[in-house]
Structures are given as C-alpha cells and as structure tokens.
Length: 434
Image (cartoon, rainbow, N blue to C red; front, side):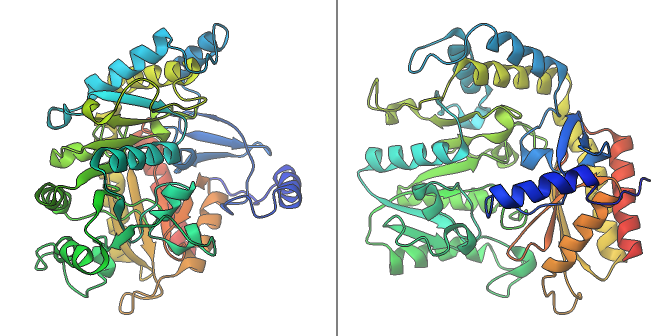
C-alpha cells in the first residue's frame, strides 16, 4: 500500500491559495488537490494516486472521465451548447428516456422538467405542489438535506445548513427520521412498529394549520450520516400521505442512477411518488437535474423554465450515462461489490471499539465512529483524523453526520472487486495503526 506525505508540496501551494481567495467557501475535506481522474482512480497535483470513495460527492456514478461519456460531451460541445428555452433533439430524447425509465410502480410520473441542480429540482417540486393543491405547508424530516436555495434550505433538518440565516420559508414542519442507531425516542426498530412514522399524526395535530401540501423525504439521508430507514418505513409514510391527501415527494438527487443497486432507490419498496427529484449521478459530473411530475400537475406551456436546464450538453451527457449503466451492467456491479464492502465494514464494527455502526445499500455506505460502544458518543474529530490518515494510505473519502462522525463510502459504480478489496484493506490497516 502507498504511504503519502499529505499534503504534497503542490497541493499545499493550492490549499494556501484556496484559503486566501475562497475563505469559508470550501467543505474542508481531505487536504489534497485533485488534478485528474479515470474510472475509480484520482490523481493529485503531486502525482499521488488514490482509490476514490467519494464519486466526487456522489456525482460520477459511471466513473471519472468515462471515454463514452467524454465523447458524448465533446461531440455535443462542438455542435450546439445552449439554446435557452428552445427544444433540441437531445432534450426531447432525455425527457423520453427519463419517463420510460420509470419503474412499473411509478408510471404516473410521465413528465420530465429538466434543470441544472438538485436545489432547483426541489424548488420546482415545492412550487408545483403548492400551486396544484392550493395549500402551502410542507413536511420534511430531521437530518434532511434538500439544497441550499431558500426554499430547499428551509426544508433542511440540519441546523448547519440554515444556521443564523434568519426567517425561513413559512409553513415548514419537521418530523423525526428513523435514525435507528440513535433513535430519538429510545426505541428499537424491531419492536417500535415504525413509531416515528406514526409521529406524523402528532406533527399535523400540533404544528399544522390544516394546510399541508406535500411531504418530502430522502429514501436515505446523505448529509445526516448515510442513514437508512428500516425496510417498510418508506411504504408506511407513503400510505400515510395517501390517507391524508398529501402529495408524496421523493428526493433522489443523491440516491438515484444506480447508487443503491437499482436505477432509482424507491424501487426497493415499489413506491409511487407524486414527484421525484433527480440530480448528481444523472449527468455524472456535468451539472444536470430533473423533476418528474404527473403531467396533470402542470398548467401549461411556460409555467416552468430554467436558464441552463435541458441544455444539449447536459442532455447528451445524461443520455450517455443511461447507456453506460445499462450496457456495462453497473447496477449488478453495485450490488455485488457493495455487498462485499458492507460486509467488510460490518466486520470492522465487530473488531474495533471505535466503529459503532456500518450501514448501506449498493455502493453507498456509512461507517460511524464513536468514542466507545457503551456511550455511542459521536467521534467527529477521530473520523476526521482517520479520513486524513486513509488518504495518506491511498484512499480518498469524506465525512458526514451531525459532528462529522460518519465516514462517507460511495465509490463510482465502476469500482472493481480488486479495488474494493485494496481500499477496504487500507481502511482496516489505518484503523489498526490507530
């Protein structure tokens, strides 16, 4: 295994530049400067190579600089880039591909609105939900993250996203998400009968004015620490929405395009959302997003628009992503390699006192660090130290969670079993060194 001195001299130079000219504008992840990447391998400006456990923050699902993806983008850039508000073949083909990709349970989603970012997708869903229902309240969840624009930020269940911002969007209600490792009600998921789903009745009874338009959730929470609800919880919430006449919005900006071993995460429970927010992996590095609607929700031509949404370059990139996922069987690879990696992480939970919980689905996993197994006190500083040490051992990763105590493990879907074994070995070695 490699052993790098982090940061290298060139990385240190650019880090200093960033700290001078991007004060407070970066995420503070591991101290390296990316220079190039291919597949599941990243190179920094000092020439060091790393196995990528970030996918560029769950973006490059088909791998970095996939030749077919690159060629589709290059060909389109040379042909046409941005006819704002006009149709192109690429735009029409992507909309068609998105609608046709909806699973059997979600054929109601027959209209695709093309955008640029996940925040835009969330804002579009909120706008349509409120106008379509004539109501204005929105329910979201503790720990949720839906973007950084005003409305999307208002739905956030994390203080850090909206800290000291001032008054947020009126009519936003928050409910507990099933963080079973740290249940806010002190229950266990095998006996609680989805108590936090039933808690929605209390939210409406005590906080709502009887004007709820929609409920929005992530099928797993990314920013809160890769938190996965127990099987059946999402179905229970959907049934509750249906019984209350509330629109059910699923935010898969992070969870879609093969990340969990299915093209869409909600397929694992055959859900039928009224709206679906997509982003990140849809363009695999080219800014692309979409909101899927039931067409009856839209009033007509001109209601929805986005300056760069549906531009032909983004559409060409997304069309290539569809082809690559399908033809290279990346869903199957995510299932197989992901199962191996999660098994390795769960073994580390058994072996190391500081590993509290390993959870995941497909190629998205979280390893939560604690001071000890009795108190479960989150160990954010320890996780940061481990992430930096792991980079020195040839694997680049990130941190999420309330205190940054969860290691984010989400490699591109093209990761090989050999790379999975090598990177898991590096993590286990790093833990052993600790």
